[in-house]
Length: 352
Length: 229
Image 1: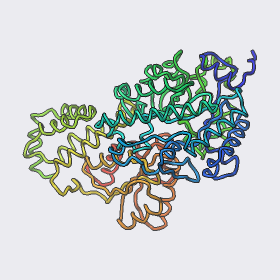
Image 2: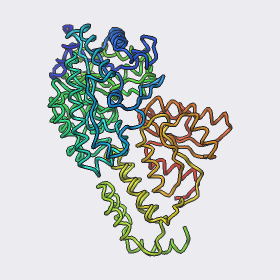
Image 3: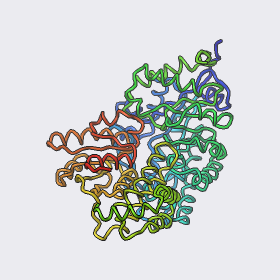
Image 4: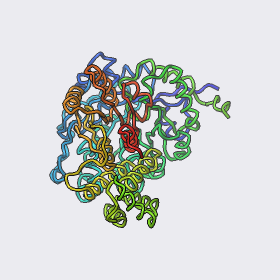
């Protein structure tokens, strides 16, 4: 039986509808590799929207995957707030010293205006240009840090835990400011042409906080914020565990959950069935040293566990493939998806 | 630990169900209830009970169990972090002023290489101190050259490096190379997220040991110090 060819957008939408498209959609969440394609330093690459557009278009063609990833780097939001960014030659830019030095700083904190931020403007320009190129054939994924997870970069993880536990009024105040910023930033990306927003929320994962605390904090914040975002959202745990909160996540209004390699994909699929589409969960760190055979085995295993009946997009488990992952591994992953991910997945029956 | 105090603690132990107290203490930590945790230690108070016995019999087992729980995905990082901080604070109250380490051990230091994500370092720092070890804190954002210079200056024998980013993890190789060139036999212990996702990464970057959580760090440091448990 031969499947009818679909565009990437049709493929993804069909899978989101919990049905089988022509093949398993593949999201290679590549940001840094665009710089390598253009022979530029990472810093130079992200300095101009046109570079990112060219990089993303080359990666789309080269690896035959199913999305444009309009993600520059995680601390770009911190940069917009006036925070320090540190660029590296062989990895993603990192946030520098937190700009909230004491809890009192929160009282006078003002969010940046999206339209007045040069770095955010480059992202919006890139999305606009990418939309002109791919139209409605390929989904463009915009990115925002959740209001609940952004403070890790704003004030540091340790201080943030202390705020969360000991300073309820200031915590609520910070969340209110961050929610306004997050919704505005996500909606600006959607208006520029993004198809959906990846809502990175690793602090909500059960790796970081217990479920009870999530229900009192990140859950409510996600529910409020996602309701203000005027487009579909994918909640990404950036390698954190989420199996114990799958039902809760489904109630936040998200349609996709980015899952960790630390949890079993088959168990996640069962838990998400009919409620959420799974995005994941290839190990991006281990991927650096994979052979073509390793890549094929990992792809095949993921499809075996989560591919049936749609509701699955193959991706890495962190939301950003490391700079050190070589091109031949990415090619092998793509080849394996095209070989083993074509529906119907008849070969799965042979596995019983 | 002197013989008299051992006898004293034995006397207390005969009347007290230590595993139950450890459980009680652990539950107080997981509930992030500083006062309840302190009460468990106060209830155990006996003039003959030494601080090291609190540490060995109550604090270390509780933190060890919490660390294992995190490893298995049953306990969250926020609980691990706050538990370590509470124990560190309690130990500060228990120990005499001008705090000193409870047991002799090699000179140790801890640092976050290159980036500013300090949580992992702070957890390890807290748990080690709560377990009776002292170490120099080199902070975060330190470069390879700065780190090696400080190790030389301070004559550090055991170096703990915490990283969050893969690019920082790969820099450990440069630290090892520079230490080898300087003919220093400092033991490098590494930990952090990248090592959890690639079990061969520690070996690749030349670390002597990899620890996946703070309590593994305590066990390793105890072993390196030649302390019998």
